[in-house]
Length: 611
Image 1 (cartoon, one colour):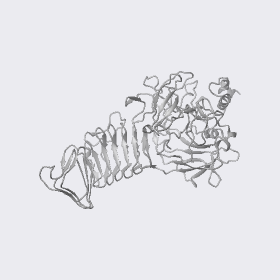
Image 2 (cartoon, one colour):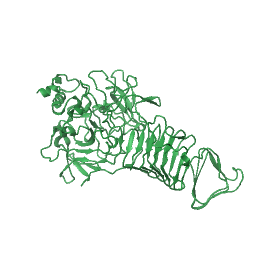
Image 3 (tube, rainbow, N blue to C red):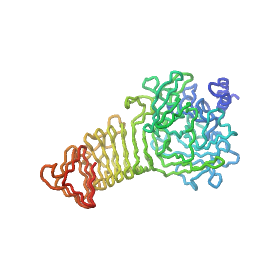
Image 4 (cartoon, rainbow, N blue to C red):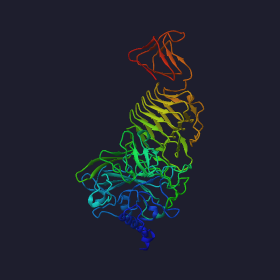
């Protein structure tokens, strides 16, 4: 009884906003699980410098035995049962699911392990205890101290006998995903827990919210989350109390977050009724998937330890630096979870893959993204690398479009051994100070007709030993006020005559100020003179008007200029036709006008493209 008292059973009389049963369960759970540093599903406050610290600047809802007032389900989660050793007596394994023949299988998985069958049946979690846990990869690649993360998959059917919901708020049925951060040692280490170590994913997706409010009567805010503000890796979702700089002192302090009443999305009805307390997107339906290209994605979460969250209305301090064991990168992986089918008894079949590296939709990616394996951008799809607007740090904001932003510019790093392939006619855009870094030993491939665009204020760094490969009519565009750094020893492989790197007028050699990236070798001072492997070229001839009169093209050619003219009436002597013979493919690329007058002949079997 002393142990129970030490963990706060005397607080039962202070019910606050929780129902009496939930409050009693919460306080009793402290005696089973741990102190205030084990609060999750809405981080509570603490009374010491340690137990109020969390993994995230925002306060994140969810569910669990130690969830707070903003929980969205009155029940334990898979981590609770695993931590306490609670196992269905009919199960052999503590984390257990069924195969498609109904046999029990060990469902405590590690990314990439061999699977005899990659389809699993999850029965109702509350009544039978089925769950899957997957250890996510790559987190310790650059920092061995980073805490492990795991994806939990549970099927919640909200059955009457499970008492998962005792409120009047409707709870959706289906698959729920949680990310576990650390807290994976059953042999001790109890004082190292931080609050919000179990993070729910929302089928609504993650977004850079734009806020309106507060409402003068309630103090609540409305948020806008249109498609252009999709941010799968570092954005907020409806089960959060988002962190923002409410008092305008250029820092985000502990407990400085807001309550959202409604979320407005482009073309959708508002998601209202205080969604942090539970909403229709808490569960994922049949047909949904989780992968590197979905929102939310299958990648681990960035973390930033907060300062202690004191009781009452006091905000607490701003912890200016992440902890040494925080994860500060977005590690891409090939994990895909497909929700395939639901049976009459409520059981749900899911499929797990380790090798889905396709980006098969248009995505906007923000943050410090790391590629260690491979990535395939599908034809006609676009990745936009943009500056995220959701806080990932507590101090030193920058101004983006008049808005103070607590996040650093996006850096997409292609690690040694990684391979990124742009399929034909796909596009990668780097905008608003975003930087692509090709590390030594990485390969970046731009397919036929695909385009890599480095737009104003963005940058491309090709390190010594990295390979930038362009095929067919693929091209790299470095625009006015964009930066490029090609280190000596970088491999620029422009395979075909129409494979080019275009250095437009006003491009900048080097990396932008404030990028935080240092070239390991000096940038080539004249990128257009960097050695090229193949038949293409690095073109910087966009400052001079070109006249291509009296030319017979027998092979493929890529012509550039500030303007391009062809035809006997528009050029000075020598006069004569421009003839493109069969088998020759010509691209005319000018920053100004391209004027084709009589006297230009494209014979059958030849092509002429004007860009």
